[in-house]
Length: 387
Image (cartoon, rainbow, N blue to C red; front, side, top):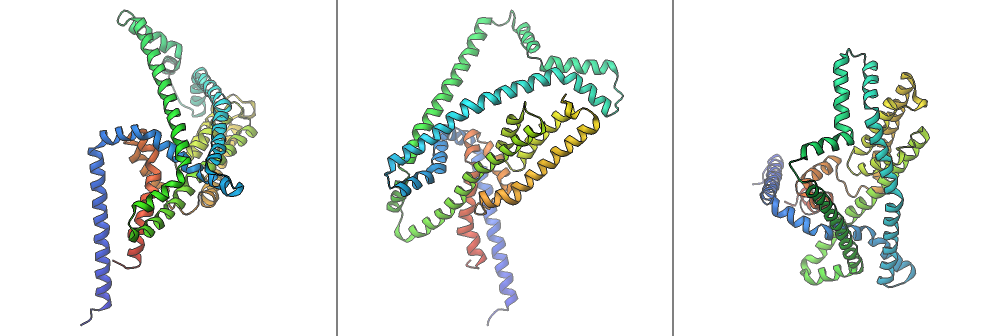
């Protein structure tokens, strides 16, 4: 006797709910095991971090190598050399032009913050009509000066260590740490440069190796899923770089027009770089610009009314940038193939941060790969009622 349709639908829903619960339990178990093995995982990711960074860079720039091969009919090696020359030129230009400007503007901003902090506190007290005791305000100003003035901090550190620690030993330790950091950074960059070159050179062989190793009955299925992952991951990584550069450029140009020339490039860089984390780009660009208008000494924003108008302009521009990013740049440039919700990006970054720099680097790419694999292997068949 056939069962009623209602019972069949109920049975299907119960089995679907059971599968969802099972996957959640498995996911929780994986997180628990990773948490228990955190030191080993963190060490492994730290050791492999040059390979991870090199692989991501090679993955991003491989389409250029492939395009050069097809467009000019050259072999893989010349295409890799031309692409590598482009990568090195962009990197050298960034360090030679952008880094000194960022350093100069950051140094200027910190100096102005230290020098103007007491005046800012007075002005804020006047605007907010706060009844602050002059003695308390003087104590607050003294606290800010003692905790932000580098010369005071250095002098205090010298007083503490005088007679207790040998000055020569402290200087030697500082110099040793600095040299160690420089050598470590140089070695890391060197490893990334060399490994990335070989990854780009041998990128086309990976597919052949995979076809040799995979059984024939699963080969087509695996490569179908990999094409989906490649489409999603490539669109996300390359698209995010383009969107970040676009957002940073828009903020920089806008702040130059607004008159904020001293910090325009620094804040634009922060906004573009921060835009890789959902919702952080407009915050990192808008908040410093608004503080500059409120507490700066620019004659264009002298009166309270002008400052409020300036802040409203900053807020409006930040909202417009967020809207442009959400409704145009992300769908058109990053693409809908990644289909990774911003909250899932934040969750992936929070989980990855628990395992150090390596975990932070692979968090979002790994989340995209897991999402595509789950969708292809589990969600789509479940929607087609194949379970």
